[in-house]
Length: 185
Image 1 (cartoon, helix red, strand yellow):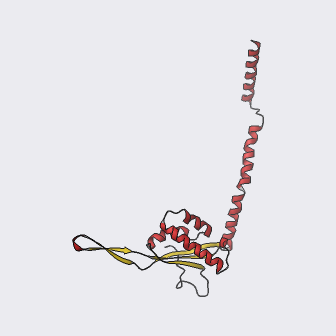
Image 2 (cartoon, helix red, strand yellow):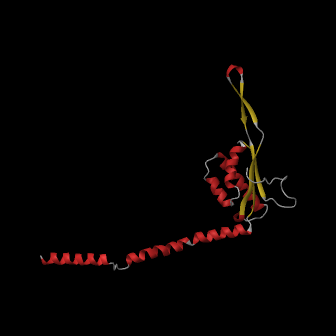
Image 3 (cartoon, one colour):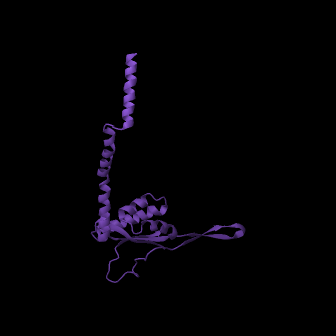
């Protein structure tokens, strides 16, 4: 896992680590959940939700629910704006393992380990610098349509204008000569 966990032991005294949500005893191994959690760490909430929506893993479905719960906790409990949140930390700890057995040859038993995990997602408010970068990107994404219109208009302008090329003039003269010869005969 990259980055420190923001659980109670590692948190600084008096500082808020953000809004969190947990899903405990999820019937999935922690290593499978960590693969998906690595995709959304340090992402904005909207972007993280998009990533989870289009990830083809069972862990993504569970983690998306945890993310939605964390956003709801931030909006309802901490009165934060959902658009200004990002995934500050996310981690999956191992839960209890259910031990089962299956019969094997010669009276032996093979063990089956049914693993569980506890998934935690911590959200926090974007810093002023990250909000400024996000706003600049959104403004830049709005302007290309007007820039594109200008580029298309500029590209059509030479096509609409009369051609004054020498080769075009020679072709026109040759075409006029051919039509006059046909009309004379």
